[in-house]
Length: 304
Image 1 (cartoon, rainbow, N blue to C red):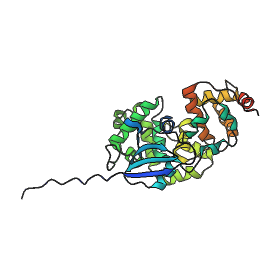
Image 2: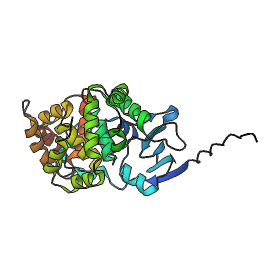
Image 3: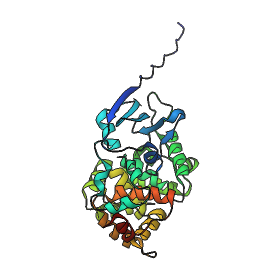
Image 4: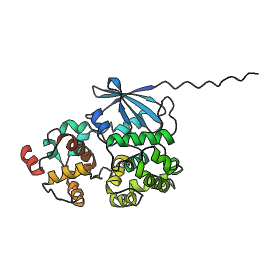
């Protein structure tokens, strides 16, 4: 009897969602500001990205509604959580209203902090050392292509979990473009893979300084990467990652051009419990628009 080829099951039809938004949402700023690395702009203004084991097509925002399509298992509640659709970014300005006087700041309040997977966030920022956003995106995509699971209905793959990375060879990670960061990514994956659920639960609930110290104990993780993991992956909005752009921005706001990073973080406490959210707006604006006035000058502009 002749053998017949097994038919491949048809890809699932995409599911369309229309989700109401509280406050503004700027898709371009959200996807290009350096917090996430698997979003691409497609022809016609559509954005495609990988969230967990699902590919999303974000069609746009119209009349306060976010339109998107999903290929893979994800529900509307998860999407609302990921995009923070129930949260108006204006709410984070309660203790830092002077920032509204920075030219270009208010339009960027539509930049949403995405609630990302903590492991993917940590691994991505380990890959970020000495690299720009384009290079990081290429590295993260290559790691996923080599080691991640297939996504139904998509030509892309999910980002591999810590156990999958822990089982990889350093040479494979190097070939994916990770370069000198490969042993750091491998060593951190092995540590996290011992008990991922307990690891992340501990970091979500621990005092911020303890959580930061535990992350810094991992291979290749310094204060900036630790704070990025806390902010973008663990929803710790009190984290205030300091890189060269935030260093410049915060020193300008303080009017102290030689302030050390520890002083910047202490000063940022005055921005309130949502300072991590504001940090990302400041980061993106300073990187794209130039120097800031001091807070004293901003208060004068605001009439305070």
